[in-house]
Length: 266
Image (cartoon, rainbow, N blue to C red; front, side, top):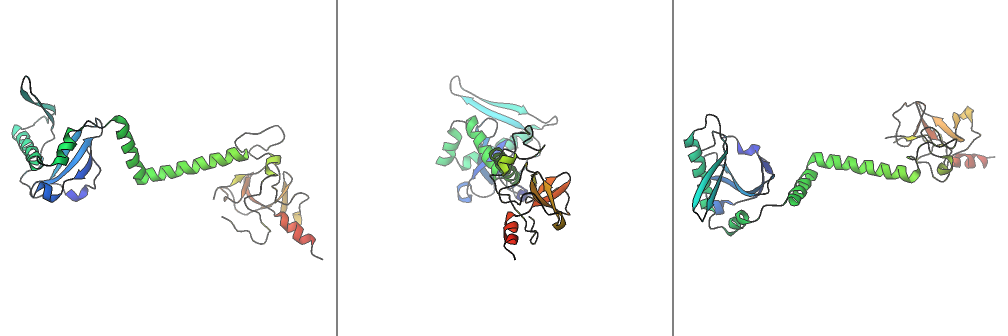
């Protein structure tokens, strides 16, 4: 039969596998038996993966269900799907293997409790799938991106970046001048330590609180934008997170502390 090592647990067809019966509970020569439930209906199930050394393995795809009634008494085998060239000996062998698995655990109290419980409700099935998805690498990646997006959205809301442009007070993609004046720039440069770190912020509508303000010093590489002094960088967009992006260039704000330090020099 197919190599069992390829199966890593979890979902198998329409079934989600749960507790595996131990060797001492099941015995040898049959395979691996799991408690399971149908992910679509929540119904309890037993799923057997035949041992590689077993005398039988599935050769055809069948989907069947069995039922019984006390009064009037009857038992029934219902076929949900049968292969076009299905053989009844293959179906009989399938039923024999399932009967053997049930016989191995017929005295097991946990097996009885599992098979006689009510189907799992839709909400529990949804919560279970959500937890399993979040534990997967894809779920963790998307959850991380959603967290970053939420954080950026909150920051934009707090700083007013998402309020859109206003008449005269804002640039096309900038922060209002009065808002910027109450904030410290994410990073300033003293033109001696231009350390860089990803994802730029838009050019504000006015200078930051800790930024040097006009008049600026063009001979020292400074340019005036919206009343603040900036240093243009060689880097082109996309800019780093400590830089402002403006008209196809990356800029760093000049530190106001530089002005104070220079004014103290003789």
